[in-house]
Image (tube, rainbow, N blue to C red):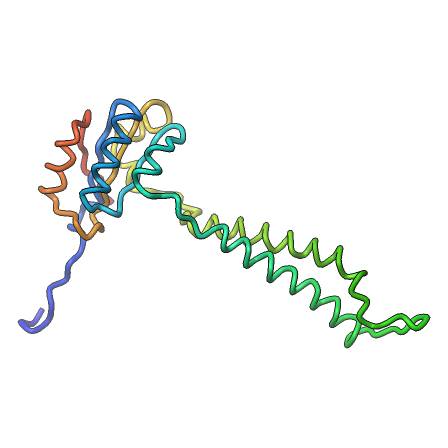
Length: 188
């Protein structure tokens, strides 16, 4: 690297983040609230069941899925109606008994079904895309305590090393101040 090139800032090599384990959902919610207030934004909480207070503390209520479903429904409806118009006007026009070529009342049911199909497909595809699925591997499973307890009775808070505020020693001290049962390194 030359003297004029800027230094590369990023997560420490060999460290994906730091994980703190808490004994119950209430202490996890308090820790999540304090972590968010401290300015950490690349934070995840893992619990064996949904805990609304933790989601609120981490501000995870904003989802793009409803907008994706709306867009998929609108595009599906327009596509279904357009396909019927194209079929009746261009591909296979038939004038039977003086009926107009664009008989929109007959198009309502197929258009509705295409709207539902578009919305459903965009919901599934959007959910998979936004969740990063399929994900056959995640670094948190490298921590033995997480593998043992995450789905039974473990409550975990992870601060990723990619967080702009992450500092290896400072973040570990911060997590220790939250009174966890244990703080572990998460390796990639």
